Length: 143
Image (cartoon, rainbow, N blue to C red):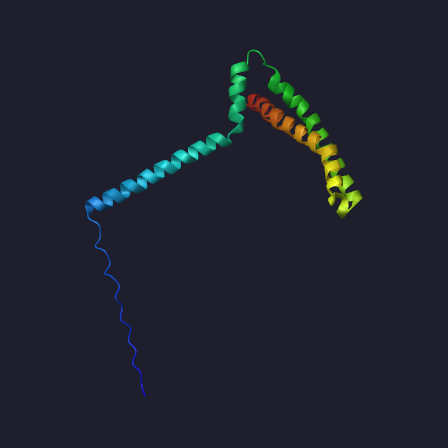
């Protein structure tokens, strides 16, 4: 016994190529999408430019606080050293106490009470002073 199997394809014929008006509409849609993507990219870049906020602040208050960027540049190493020292102390303590040192709620809370607030506040201060210190470096470079 022999079977002869042939496949029958009932696919639709490809659509005819769009006419001149269809191509123009398609190109216009592509251009509109690209314009929208460009606008969104510009907004994202503006949001991520954290130094723009500080430049605006210093432009407004340049007369009243002319020495602020230079002073921030001078004290930034002290703040960074204090931050580094705190992190070093924190990790040394964790290493010395072993892997199970934060397993209980009590020990975790004690650890957070000891380091959490100071580390968070000092990090926040660094995030405020750092950009102003960079402005001092920018002013020295002529920007």
